[in-house]
Amino acid sequence: INDTKVHTLEEGHYEGSAWIRFASSAVGTRIADMLKNGKTPALITVAYMAASTNVTIVSFPFSAMLDANDYLELGGTQDSGLGLNVESAELYLRKVGPRII
Image 1 (tube, rainbow, N blue to C red):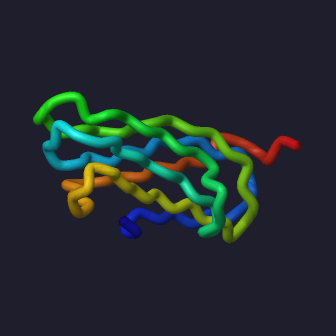
Image 2: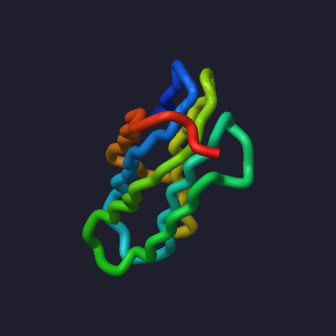
Image 3: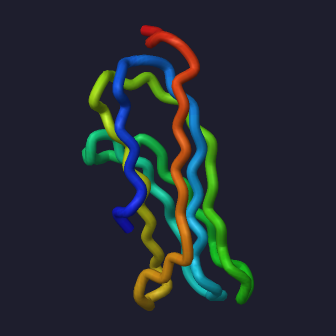
């Protein structure tokens, strides 16, 4: 997915949270990646095994030192052998203080 992206207006210490809700499936792994400025390797990668026929929600909090005009992008993948089926996703970001070296 590439529909969840946030930009910073000024440098600083930021905190936030992100989640992706994958459709029901009992097989495979669901993965959420947080990219900074579209570059790999990912700033954060979180993976959950699908354990039942219920939806799988991959979520995580994070903290990052960011510059002005940086952006964070939330992406998702799965390895079940079927097409990617994301029901919803959200990325939240807030500045909590000045940039700390």
